[in-house]
Length: 360
Image (cartoon, rainbow, N blue to C red; front, top):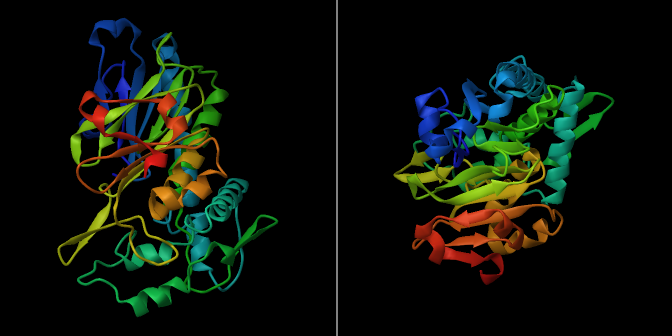
């Protein structure tokens, strides 16, 4: 399950679905059961979705879940590369041939993707589909050997967000064989869409979670913010600490452990540098706290690709993004940006591992 490193620290009732409970949810504060939020979980977009509401709004949960499910289903039908009739699939099939008509939502999604590509100097790029398939992801054939540099170079000729044009409800990729893959931003966009849709349902205290991409409104209970545990990337059974999120805030994690391929005995993560065509190494996980889920989702990729030092100039363009960065090395070191310290409380076992971003 991609990006499943965020665990909701639930005050609520057990959420249906044992696998989802195992990976994302675990109960705390059992002595305050009367104040527990209510939650429901289901499968969607190849992962798990959940919606939690405060106990006082439990009667609105079923209606809110139905609205959330409908919103996610509509977006999946438009954006999924696994649906041959989706707008993104039709755009990819028409690459280098002709523009295709797209909906307002799809155009908004692609414009936001291009915006984050520009803001990240191309280290986030929605046109990475050919690279993902080359490395055996997203319907790509399994590999028995690492691709050679010449092959990677050839595929890189079909990658580049500047080859995507948008105008008057039409989209066009100007080179044949190009392809859009919204895996690096789509779940964040979907969480925000659900968050906005639920505003019409007048639920004041909720948490939307799609495969570990999370956005919260209000609080879990009076005086208790929504709390999310961040998984230890080296031990799936424990957390490194807890985030306590303010009203409206979002969080997403990119990790090297959730989705990968094994080639010749070596693990290669699904996060590929769109500049070089190679999977990124030496980073275990990057968590981004932001004002929207799409920004948290999108900006976790440039930080992962560039690393702690080189990503700082990117983050200055996004002052509302706060990061938690864990290198892929032992002993564990956890780097916090100044803004992240406001929201993060380390688990006792990790108190001695916390460093400032500037210390790197």
